[in-house]
Length: 268
Length: 170
Image 1 (cartoon, each protein chain N blue to C red):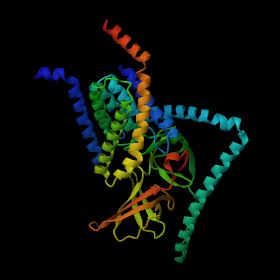
Image 2 (image 1 turned 90 degrees about the horizontal axis):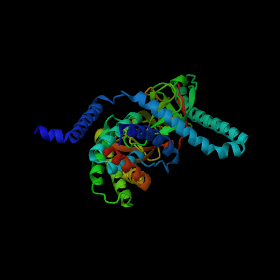
Image 3 (image 1 turned 180 degrees about the vertical axis):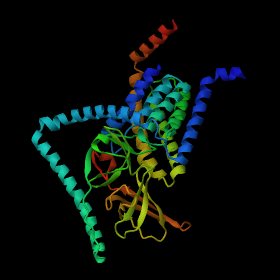
Image 4 (image 1 turned 90 degrees about the vertical axis):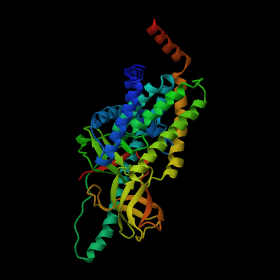
């Protein structure tokens, strides 16, 4: 018997490791994921990502940035940023106007200021199927903290999950661990939007709630992370099951997550 | 293979996957570089070493991506083990049929991950994911993996590895 263990030491070690990993995963499913060693890996990975992305973008921009009309492109970028900011402000304003009308009836209104934000560049995207995250090029030195909302002028991208001085990891709204408090813009019905990898699903929606395909879901602000009224997702599929008291609602993010290059981090 | 070679490969692999394949992906679909490299390791080494390599690579992916720690380690470890077993039966290491196996392992890994997520979080659109994400990803991984396999099993590289092994034995 000892000879058997001696002979198959490596195989046994692999099997034991598998069991340990399985045990680790089951613990995290119940108690939440461990964050140990997360920052050192993010630091090393972020360092190389910055170099690789910088080199890639540097090469890619040689043609467009220096050979082809340097000033025009610079101006274009400035204007594009401005347009994005204006679109964002316009969306917030639309939501505020709708809210204002409701509040006016009760003769109670409050002055809202758009929160300050930090512009970040995406330097890396996670490729694993079990999660959806990306790395951005700014961190705590730029005032970024955990659980801050990350958005683009089109809508919500996700929230900051881990922060280092020079970079941060963003959990996208399609990540299975992501939950956002939302509201149907048309009729103000509330719900919790969960990530389902390439799309999202609205959780615990009663059978009798009126939700239609094409409805826009906006942040309700109830989770304390996302400012109120930002577009999040559009309802793409509604299924009602006779046997269940809930309906299944799927929604696609309004932001094309695979095409983002820059985003804004909202400071609280 | 030596430990430091694995450390360098894995440390470079994660950021390369995240940064280079992000912008170069088509419609958000990028090849799984980790699986492609693991396939090469499995074929060149054996089941046990490939399983260890898969576990290490998966754990790094988990730490870097913010998913449940150990999940990718377990998945890639199991896949590495099977690739290693397959490697013992592969006669022509440069055969294009390897790309089919890489694709199949890619789909197997994705299906494992999706089933786990379905069990844990529920209402994961499995069929949609299979058609829109798993299959295209497996195809791109198969192509990238076959390219890497051709590169590392180039006659000159293999001759170099064999020469070093012979020197070690002598």
